[in-house]
Length: 132
Image (cartoon, rainbow, N blue to C red):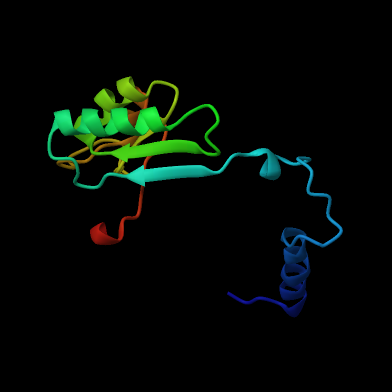
């Protein structure tokens, strides 16, 4: 792919739009400044049992309040998703730790975006280094 000098200069000068200038008003005038930070936790292959997942989710939910400075999401193992969703309610988002790019077919163990969405899951992690 050939890139011309003009397109390189255009990219270089347009990048300045992302750099804050000292004179910029930092009031909440854009969605970027209005949005709360988003903090997530990926449980990986933990906990070992459903009861441990319930206890962990309850402890996390009890520590998040309306005054918490960030939105929180938990990415939990597939067997615990619906249980943790029930515990978290609207207070904390619950996502899947993995999603298969295929929508259907002979992919043993795969979980598609359609399957997750049907369970109320709106978030999924993708691109784990240990799975590449």
